[in-house]
Image (cartoon, rainbow, N blue to C red; front, side, top):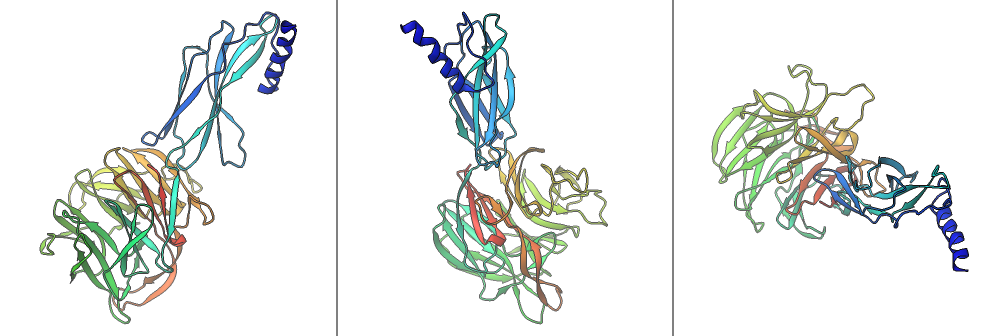
Length: 439
């Protein structure tokens, strides 16, 4: 009786595995059980490493590895690969997109039927995961328009085009204070992207802010402000510049960039040196690989020949020669593909993993590079879902640096930073919020 019941049960199991499978034929031994699948996800290589135990049975044909996107409009599984050696039980899915949840399965196929001319399979359980998933988001006060974010220890500092103070949060988005650097309005300028206040950390944890004070009917007033690590305002000093844009600090050296010049100071605010720089449209300036690195928008009169922006590391402060260049030119007018920068507004450096995170504002996404190679990306234009960005919108912009007149017009802006744990913070400017993504 037991032998009579066994065959119908096996038929029911195979029917539940999928209509493409053949029924067990006469004398088929099958396999010793479905693959037991595990997956590990690595953001540093943008990959998922799948492993399963070897299934046994001399009628084995192949393993088939399949993947689907959990939140996709069409969650159909796609075939990633087929392995015919039963001892080959590892598969690496490379180049996966960040902030996307993947689902994987492995099917072990084997021959059935009297003549072994049909197929059946046993299927693993599903495993899920991804890299840099969305963690949380928090809103900024109305009109703040966050453009720069700086993570220092357990505090996230946020600066905005529409506010004269630094908004400070803990790593979970709870506000822990505001450090005011001006009681007036910010004068913002549109070059490559929106230039508003910028900040950098000193060697002892002091916070330096460069900004331009708006005054109706006169030129903007370039200033820089220093706070001690506890938030006490130490000083605010004028800068001999037309318009101040960026600040970078390395080993006690303070570099402040304005239009066509780079000035060096010490951390007490004393002037050290001045360097002329080309009149390039630089949207972000950082210290990377022992040198200054800049997001540069190509201009019609320069000699670079670039058709799209680049992240450039220079051999000298005067920026006459590039040490390294990251980015590519478009393949066509419709090209929006991986690694193509359009109006990038900021970048952050992962020194440990050798990665660069770029706010690709013109495409409303974050691009990640490792070395000179594109690694992964995430984001799209929108405001309803987590992971949606709005890097284009309207802001008050100075039209004339002599008279200081300003108008509201459409610009692009956005900022990014990494904390000590590897979490990523994105200043989602025109959604007026900070979005946090896991390491």
